[in-house]
Amino acid sequence: MEAAMSAVVGELVIRFISLVLKKYHSSNHAQSEEKMVERLQHLLMRVCTIVKEVDTRYITNSGMMMQLKTLSEAMYRGYSVLDNSRYRALQEGAGFNEVSSNDSSSSRLYLAKRSRTTDKATRLELHGALESLEIAVANMAEFVVLLGGCERISHRPYDVYMYTENFMLSRHAEKQKLLSLLLEHNNPPGDHAIAVRPIIGGAAIGKKTLVAHVCGDERVRSRFPSILHLNGDTILTILDHGRTMEEMMLVVIEFTSDVGDDDWKKFHSFVIKMGRGSKIIIVSQLKRLARFGSVQPIFLGVMSYDELRYLFKTLVFRSVGPAEHPRLVQIADEFAKLLWNMNGSLVATNSYADVLRRDLDIQFWRCILGKGSRMVRRNLSIYDVHLNTLIHQGHPVDITDFALHPLSMTPYSVNVSIKKELPSVTFGDLITDPSVRPKGDFTLIAWESRIPPYKSFPNFVTSHAQDTHQGSALPGRKRQGEPI
Image 1 (tube, rainbow, N blue to C red):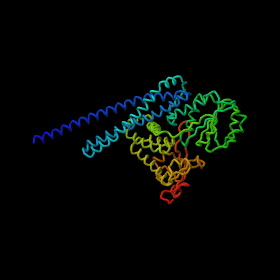
Image 2 (cartoon, rainbow, N blue to C red):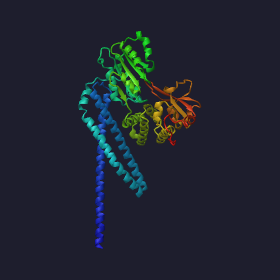
Image 3 (cartoon, rainbow, N blue to C red):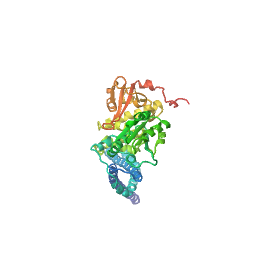
């Protein structure tokens, strides 16, 4: 009997010691993670200060531009990891309260398993983000010194707001590259050479917004008395005004289709005759137009997920602290994933942000998210092609889920001219209140900037979307379920 009691006591002592050790290690892990979060916050504060200062300076050093790109990427990743850590803490707190109230062994077991699964991943994320930021900051000493010697940009009072509205929270390095070229006094090699910089990128990715912001810079405007915006399809019409255009100019040309080499040579020869120092910016989605550049093109790609996530949250929450709405932060992450899967369309990003700002309510946000997700799935089911491809190629898009009525949408810039007599509805009004839909055809304004360059994105919307789309898979693509 005594031996049995001794064995039981021994087992209980072992279990007790094991429990104490587990709690000790758990406490150490929590403290370690908390210190990592604090360190991450501190580094992000330093890096964000540097990046903001960059936007107030003119940078011409290519090495500094590369460092800036690395620094900004590490910053966006760091903010993403920090948000994930905060939301995980919120989930665990909610889970703990729920388990305490229910006091069920199955709930406690579930929470313990979930905690063990996510703890390691979270620590790895924190460690990776910290390492990237620490390396970036460690290499910033010379960068900061050189930045202090760069000329300061004179900002107007509404510039910060303008940058937020028109997506200039990112593209720091690209903006500096374009500014560097336009403010350069020396022409490229050659007696009569003209600097031509192509800006190439996908649809709605921010090409024209980038150019508009740079052209609005005071030094650029003072350097070029005239900034001429042209359509690539009609560039030769400028030849008819040769006698009245003899001063130094900045010419911005938007190409929606390719142009022949002979036509380009004629146009280029004409610009050469203008005042010495004239420069050309080519804006297009077509990579082959990069052949006309005299300097390295700027290729605008899709933002990284972390960068788009940071941008979207800034647009949505504005002056409202995200920490005040932790549940909405998690839904904002889901929106960011949806937008990134749509190729990071900045028009869609600002459209959704404009809608969500109207009501910081969880159910409202989930309703809008559901509509957007269903629209993507519906078009994929109809065409067997991603929504992004449809928009890029100018095919009608089914937006039934937005208006709760069969509708088809086509951007005006693709193959239809704007019909001014049609009633107009904004995306925000339609998605929040489908009853505003006009009975017949109408113009849907996806988004319109409130300040220069006042860019608008209208779409032609017609009813009977199902009749239009049913059985109309894109040419060359097999519909799901069809025999090969």
